[in-house]
Amino acid sequence: MKKSGKIIGAGIGLTALAAAGAYFLYGEKNARNREKVRGWALKMKGEVLEKMESMKKIDRETYLRMVDKISERYSRLESISGAELQHLTVELKNAWAHIDKELK
Image 1 (cartoon, rainbow, N blue to C red):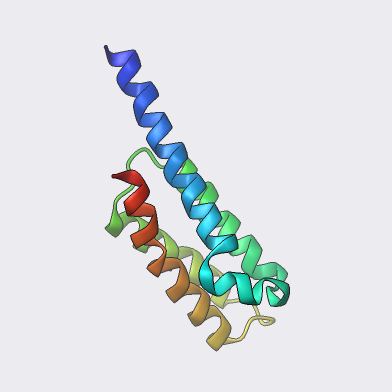
Image 2: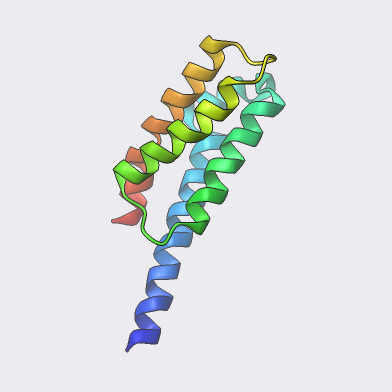
């Protein structure tokens, strides 16, 4: 029984991860702007996905803190404007609604 529970939990986690990845790369706003996406933005989104993959429990507060930490680290780079970083951070935080739907 414990083994099947772990398998179900892993399946739910992978589904949420796939939904997040699809939303980050192919969401409504991203479909129009995909050609304009800079390399750092893809790296940041990938980093968020990697962190989500390693999380045992995914909840809203943990997810938002994780996005803030990653965003703070990217804010130290000179090649990234504050407005671009702020826009991407808000977009990543708003993605929680879509991720949460997949978890339920």
